[in-house]
Every structure is written in structure tokens, then in C-alpha cells.
Image (tube, rainbow, N blue to C red; front, top):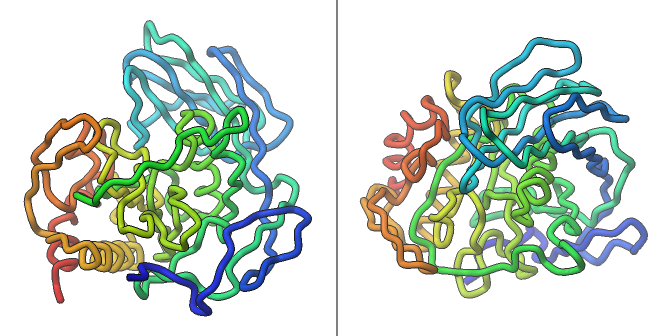
Length: 336
């Protein structure tokens, strides 16, 4: 049973700066992501205008902050990414070339990364010539948003080898990045850099992302079988969106901050369509209550087939406005 394909039926996810484009693809260029890392809380400068600053530390989650250039201090939000024993934040840098961070009292191992995902040198990708689809829902494949596959590797090996388990649940997130994003593909590249390299996950943490125009982006790499998120046997690749509850749990992130502003109609519609096709494909009831069982360690948790990030862990994600809409999403996804 084919879950996804291009309209023409053939693609290649390969990327290269020099190779000729394989059949069924066309060359497109995206700016390579530039980064500058720092440790500690001393002021840091960069040689480029930063799109985002990523921050991670060991210690209490609350109490971190950042000051861009000579501006005022601002508290970092709770964010979406979660790690054991510490905190994380990804902050829009507004093209700043300097910044300073403060960590919670007693925090250690403070690491920051300035990320430029819009102005680096061009890199050519082999993008499918025809639209890729998930059971009729169009999505941008990884090469179509400029995913540099080398970032999945560390010391010459895949940093987090793919593991696959039956799908049990779907979790909704927001990326906690600015709304009215003028370049959401660049934001996806920035999140990819932050998750894969700074947090050392080896890839972006979500299976899919959705921007405010309703465009769906393929997230976590799942193999070369043209089936996003799943392997050829229909099992879900493990991603990194709900620490401790990742295996068998599919993560979809809406790009933006949905604490006070609701998702756009287009984003919500795409979320519902995507959940509907996945639950139908896998025979899940979007309105059911479930007992999730982690296939790796046996940990169980009562939840719903379609949940929010905060239903698993202590976090504001997916933002109050999105969380309040989950009942509507479940009902709509269950409609035949």
C-alpha cells in the first residue's frame, strides 16, 4: 500500500552541489545554514546576521533570558523542545550580530548557537519535479525545503539511527517561533540545525510541520522509500518531540506561537487533513482514549489518540489557543 508519492511517481531525495539532477528531479538552490557556537553567558558576537539563537543548559528549566545586541533583556519562553535534566530555547534574533544570555541560577553546561538560515552560500538540492503527496495531501519533501542531510551524521556515522514501531498516537505542537513568518522554510532549516546539532538529536524533532499558509513540510528522515514518517512496512520512525514518549508517537508542529494567537484557518485545515489521512491509513480512531505503551521500555500513559504536547510533559506547547481547538480537530478528523 503506497502512502506517498510524487505526481509523476518518481523522486530522488539526494542532494549535491555538483551531481547532475537524477530523473524525476530538478535542481533548486537554498542558502546553506551558517552557525556560530559559544559556551557560557559572556557576550557573543557573530560575523553574520543571525536568524535565531538557540540555547541549552543543564539545571532548572525556568529563569533563562537573552539580550540581543544592545537591547533589553527578554525572558525565554517554555519553548517546545524538551530535554532531560535541563532547558532549551530557540529565540528569533532579528538579524542581530551580538547577543548575551543568562541562565537559571545554578545552571551549568550553557551552550548557545547563532543560526543564519537565509543568507549563507547557495547549495543545490535535487527536488522532486512534481508535487509530493501524502494520500492526496501535498507536502514539501526534505530536499524541497533544503534539508542538508549531512547534519544527520556525526563522526562519519548516522547520529541517531532510524528505529520503527507501530503508530499509537499523534501529538500536536507549535514551534514557538514568531507568527507572520516571511520565510517558513528557512525557519524549518533553523529548527533542523538546532535540533540536529545543538540538541544532538541527529535530526529535526517532528515528523511534519505546517506553516501559516497551510503548507506541510516533511520532518524526521524515515528512509529512501518515498514514504514520509513511515517505513515500507507502515511502521513509524521514532522522532524527538515528546521526551520519553517518542516511539510510536507521531509529532506535527504548527509553525508559529499559538499561546495567544490561534492557528490560521489554512494551518488548521491542513492539520485536520493530515491527521485524517494518517489515522485512516493506520486504522486509528481520532476520538479514542488510549493507553500508550512505550515499545522500548514498557512505560505506559493514558492519553488520547490526538493529544497536545502538554498532555505528555510539563510545557506550554502547543499553545493555549491550539490546545483549546484539539477537540474540534479530533471531531473533524473523524468525519468521513
